[in-house]
Each structure stands twice: as structure tokens, then as C-alpha cells.
Image (cartoon, rainbow, N blue to C red):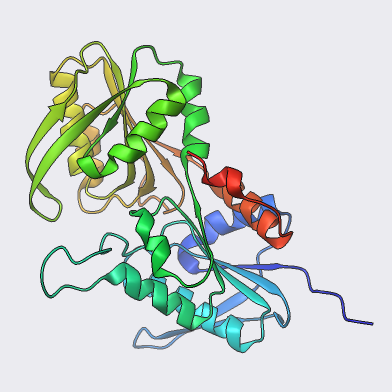
Length: 313
């Protein structure tokens, strides 16, 4: 008689402990025990304090900078592989380094491709992530990638607001596809911001394509970093006659003086997920959890059930 297959096990990287606890609770499990030893020079070593032999292992961790977060995920994947785990799924609520998805000028890396290869080499047999910066990043992997959309979280909230004269906006040309998908689901109009950058995170010029007069506008983006684009777009739309401007952004990076920009802007509300923990609280930021989404998909993966409904905008 063959031995029974062990129950799936869920482990968390340090940067995603709170989210991972919520995911594990929704999954119906407890987080596995991991101890991390740290040397005086900053080198660290995670250790699974329980057997994972023959198990399906889920390792949860967003890989936003600094690079220690990515390194911790790689080390835990390698540890699971060397401990003879049967399947190893890297659960990345936020896939970091994704903005470097192509060569936009000579002699630069394609970091997203490099990270994909490192995750696979470390031992990941499957990737679960949400709202990649660019859809083509899925093609950087040779292993299965489940690319989830946070629209399944945001759309019910937007509908609950019952906003009249709703208009969906994209803060740049690259996000127009996402904006059109939301507008289709909400049966609303679309406007697009056209921006020119002086350099990374610095906008030199922005124009609005479309009419927002008398509209309640919702900006849609995959991430918010310095909040420069969102706040500039919100201020521009209010100047052009919008009644209100909100923004939904899946990943709240919020670096530098982003919180100060949000407070001073005419943005009424920034709605985000907890894929990245907030550095500080703000009365302008509303956090919607993605724990149930990931737990549901992880359960379906474990039971070999379809998850196609989670891919739909």
C-alpha cells in the first residue's frame, strides 16, 4: 500500500508575515515554522523546523526591494527543494523588479527575466502572482504561472460606492488595456493621461485625452510608487471639472515622500491591496485584502481544480 500524500504546508517570508497568516487562515491551515538565523554581517539563513518531504509547499513572499526580500524567497525555495518537497509553489503577491521587462535603452538588464530564472533555478515548480506590471512576464517562465487579477477584489468595492457619472481613467498609455477592461465591467467611459518623463519617477509633462467634466473619476493602475503620476493626474482632472478623483492601485510601494504627496493632492481616496505592507497609515488609503483570493487559488491548485475564473477582469 502506498503511503498517504502529506497535507500541504504554507510558509512565509518575513516581509509578508501578516498577509501570509491571513492566507493560511482562509486556506484552513497554520503557517509552518521557519527560523531565520542572521550573521553579524547581515547574511541570513532560513530553516524549516518541520519536515516537508513529499509535501506540496507554498512559500508566500512579495519581492519588493530591498533585495533581501527576493533573496529570502530564493533561499526558502532552495531549502524546500533540498528537503525533498514534492511541489514547491512560490506565491508572490507582488512580483518585484517587474518594471525592467525589456531593454528600453542599450546596455541595461532585463531584470524580470533574470528573477524568473532565479526562482525556477532555486526550486519553484509553480508561480502564483497578481497584477504583473507587464503580461509578457509570464513568458519568462518555463514553469506554470497563475497570474491573478485584483479586479476581482476592486470591482465589488467600486460597485458598492454607487458613483454616478463614473469614468475610468488610465494614468498613462501603457495602462489603457487595464482601464478599458474595468470600464467594460462597470459600463463606464474611459479617459487616458498622456505623460512624458524627464527620467524615472520624474514627469515633465502630462495631458488628458478625454472629457471629465461633471464626472466621478477612478484612476486604475497596477502599482503606486512615488505617487507622482497619480497625484498629478488627480489634480489635472479636478482642474478640468471632475467632481471627484479616486485611484485603485494593486501594489502600494509608496516610496520616498509618496505619503506627503497623497495628503496634499486632490485625490479623494487611494484603494490598494495588502500585497505590500504599508509603511504608515493614512486616512486617504483604503486597504482591501487579497488573502481570500490567494487562499482560494491555492486550495484549487492543491485539489487540481480550475482557477480560470480568477484570471478574468
